[in-house]
Length: 74
Image (cartoon, rainbow, N blue to C red; front, side, top):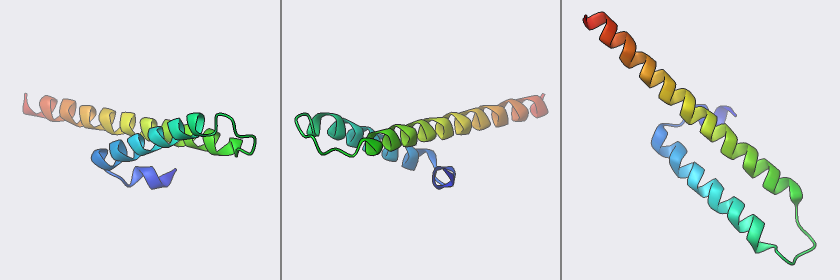
């Protein structure tokens, strides 16, 4: 979880796209296969959620900083 907090927005977006591609390959790649690691899909979905949470937190922090700066300038 802390691995995503250290990244900037651009790196998070890149990682998000990689995770989504990985999840898509997992879902459609083993369509007829019986030997699948089910936890891989679950962990990928959780990573995507963590990345989206961090992106939202960064966006809110940036918006909050803008509001504080605007309030100080008035």
